[in-house]
Image (cartoon, rainbow, N blue to C red):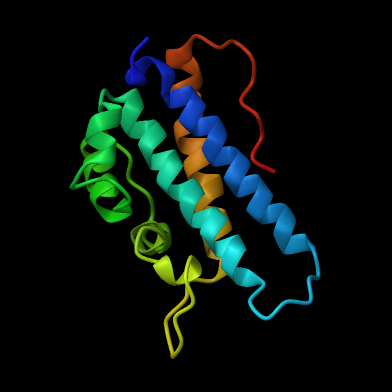
Length: 151
């Protein structure tokens, strides 16, 4: 079994949903932390990356291609490639997608001022990607059941 056989579009899609749903659930907790948004942003941003990789796997990109430049963790490059296959998010979501791969400050502490995307917009971006690519991925996988709802 090859790496491409083991890393499927449906698997990446479900993994993306797991990260997004976990971020959404974590937002509901009133944790008394110094940086409560950092793990939430990290999970949402990783979900965006995985949704894009699921879409690109659906359209034939290999795992090796997705792990290599120009893609790797570069969500802006992934979005440009996804647009070639017909994925056109609306403008507010484009900024969230492009920033998702650049926001390493949510992995490691970086002090000073920075521009952040609102969590509501990042969540909405994940939901939009989920609803936009889910039907095609389920159809290609031959799944007759309904797509797991985002919420």
